[in-house]
Amino acid sequence: MVQDLVIGIDIGGQTTKCGIVDARGTVLSQTVIRSDNHTDVKDFIAELAEALNHIIAEAKAEGQIRGIGVGAPNGNYYTGTIEGAVNLVWGGTKTIPFAKMLSEQMNGIPVSLTNDANAAAMGEMTYGAARGMKNFIMITLGTGVGSGIVIDGNVVYGHDGFAGELGHTCAVRHNGRQCNCGKTGCLEAYASAMGVARTAREWLEMSDEPSVLRSLDKITSKDVYEAAKEGDKLALKIFDFTGRILGESFADFIAFSAPEAIVLFGGLARAKEFLTEPIQKAMDDNVLSLWKGKVKLVFSQLKESDAAILGASALAWEL
Amino acid sequence: MVQDLVIGIDIGGQTTKCGIVDARGTVLSQTVIRSDNHTDVKDFIAELAEALNHIIAEAKAEGQIRGIGVGAPNGNYYTGTIEGAVNLVWGGTKTIPFAKMLSEQMNGIPVSLTNDANAAAMGEMTYGAARGMKNFIMITLGTGVGSGIVIDGNVVYGHDGFAGELGHTCAVRHNGRQCNCGKTGCLEAYASAMGVARTAREWLEMSDEPSVLRSLDKITSKDVYEAAKEGDKLALKIFDFTGRILGESFADFIAFSAPEAIVLFGGLARAKEFLTEPIQKAMDDNVLSLWKGKVKLVFSQLKESDAAILGASALAWEL
Image (cartoon, rainbow over all chains, first blue to last red):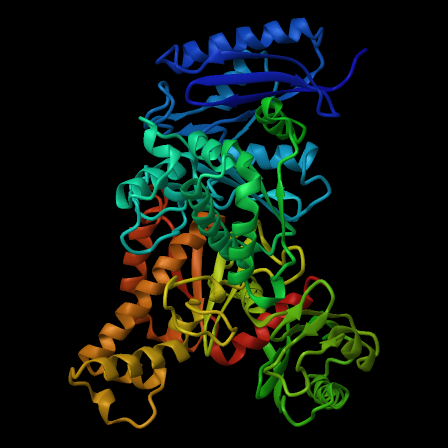
C-alpha cells in the first residue's frame, strides 16, 4: 500500500532513536544508533542515513517518506541548525546546519528540526494527551527540565527560535543551587531527576532523620521514587518539596499564556502519585483567583518507548 | 474625503478616553467622559454612545467608521465581555457583554474589546516602538503592572482570553508584600507606581538615612522621581531596587517567549534614566547566556496623551 509516511529522529547525548511513523502515530519500524561514536558530524550523519535507509527498506517505505522531523538538544527550528550543543560529542560550541546536511544525505527529503521538548509538545498535540488542545505547556522532567509551549495550536519559537526554556526560569532567587547552565536557582536544579537526587543528598546531610536512602552509595531519583513507594517519610517529603517548587513555577507560567493544561512527560513524571497533589496545591495557592482550579494538570499518554520518535515525527507532517 | 476610520476607547477607573483614528495613527477628534458617573452600565453606554456620535460629527466621519476597539480592565477578547472589574463602579463582580451592548447602541458598528495592556501592545505594534516586530512583550508600568505579549505578530490571549498577567508573577517568593490581587510577592507590588511609593515608605521607616522624601506627608512615585532627579541618594537606590526586580522578572519572561524586545510604557516608564541601567544589568545577570545582551529594552514612542486611544483603535483595524 502506498501511503504518506514520515520519519522521526530523537537525538540524545548517548543514543539516537529513529522510526518510521504513519498518520495514525503507529511506529512501523525503528532502530537506535549511538550518538557518540563519531566526533565529526559528517560521520554521524552518514551512519544515521544508513540506519534510516535500513528501516525504510524494512518497512517497504521507499518513495513514501514525506519528511523527516528531528528533535535535538539546542535545535533551532528557524535555521535547522544545532547550536552550541555541548552534550553532543560532535556538537560543542559549533553551529551545525544539521537539517540541510541530513536532507542532502537523504536525496533531498525535507528535514525539520527543533529541540527535544518542542518535539515532545508536537507529539503530545498530534498523538497524545493534548490532542484537540490549542493552548498548553509541555514540561519534560528528565535529567533536566525542558519545555515546549503551544499557543493557538503552534509551538512558540520566539524571535530567535529558542523560546521555551522554562527549566531555566528562577525557582529560588537567593542562594539557589548552581545549575548546569551557569546560573543559580533554576527550576531545573530542583525539579529534574538530577535535582531530586540532589535534594535527597542535601537533606540526608542536613538531618539525621532515618531513611532507607541512607544505606545507598549513590542516590538517583529512581531510588527516591522506590523509597517513596515503600512509604519512606524522607522520600515522600522530597517529592512534596519537588512538587511545590514545580507548582509555584507553573503558576507563573499560567499567568503568561493562560494554557488549558500543563502536560508532564519524562522519567520523573512517572512519580505521578507523589507529585500530583503538591503540584496542584502550589499551583492553586499561587495563581490569580480567575485560574484557581481551572488549569488541568495532565500526564503524557504516549508510550514512553515511542514518545521521542513520535514527537520528532510530528514535526515532519508540517513540512 | 471618504476614508476608513476607527474609534479607540480606553476605559479607566475614573475616565474614559475616546477618539477617531485614521490609518496612519492620527487622532482626528477626541473626547473624555467620566467612567464613574453611573452605576448601571446601560447608562454609561448611553452616555458613551452620545460622546462618540459627537466626535464622529466633529470629524465629519459619518458612515466611515469601520470598527470600534475598546481597552478595558478585565476585558476578554474572545467573548467581548468585561468580567469582575472591581475598579469600575458599574463593573463589580458581574460579567458584562460590553462589546455587544456598545455595538447595538452604535447601529451595529462592530466592537472588539481587550484589556488595557493588550491594547497598548497592539498600539505599540501598529504605530509605536514595536513597528515591524513580531515577538515582543509590552509591560505597562502604571498604578499597577500590566502586560501584553505578542508572538508571531499576534497578541496572546490564551485558552480563556486572560493571558498576559505578568504583573502577578512572583517577584519575591517568601515574605513578599501583599498585592491588591490577594496574593503576596507579585511583581506589581514592587514595580508599579504604588510599589515604588511603598518601597520609599518602607525604607524611610527602616533607616535614618537622610532624604528629601522625609519632609513629605504622603509620598508618590512622582515624588521619588523628582527626588532622584535632584540626586537624592535614597530615591536613586529605590529606582535601582525597582529596576533590579523588573530585570529579574524580565529574564524569566525572556525564557518563555524569546522576544525581540521588551517595551516599557506608562507613568513610571518616564523614569527611564534611572531604570534602564539596573533593569538591563539584572536582565543580563539572569538570562541564559544565549540571550545575554540580545533582547532590546525599549521605551514607548507613543505620545502619552494619545497612546491609550491609539492602542484601543489598533484592535479595531483587525475587525
